[in-house]
Length: 197
Image: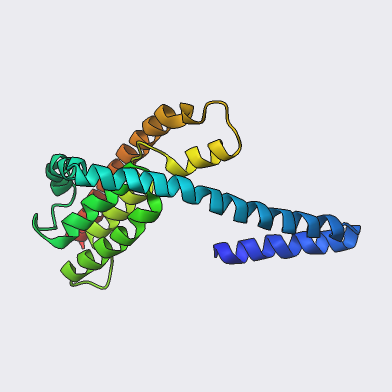
């Protein structure tokens, strides 16, 4: 659906530019935006490499394992349908830890593996309770270091690129708690409906 909306907006813009005789400006904007996108993507590589390196150091120092152990009781309560020693639990914890350090790209493969493992646990073709909870929690994404945003702010020479860290942490805590509450509310509503059927 989103693809159709984007296509309609692009086609509408081109038709409007053709009618008004501003196709030259549209062409310049297209090529400049493409150029900016490539430069931005390449400049993000250095920041991603830096934080991935920091994460590997933290992993080698046992910091990530410590975080995983600390978070495990909470995650076990959040996903009561998943056995504690099931591989899905490890992927979920790794995904949340990567998101916590702002490594969204590194978190994605672990999120996909977690979904695959949770699907194996479910006998239904529909998304299981754990899969829905994981999607809500993963989307809200509790983040300590917004790596990508920091990289963009540094690229555009912000005077204080790290000033958004505390605001981002607060916003992500609120969104994380909100996602869990909404997930639990809708789960209870669905369960009551199923009892009355």
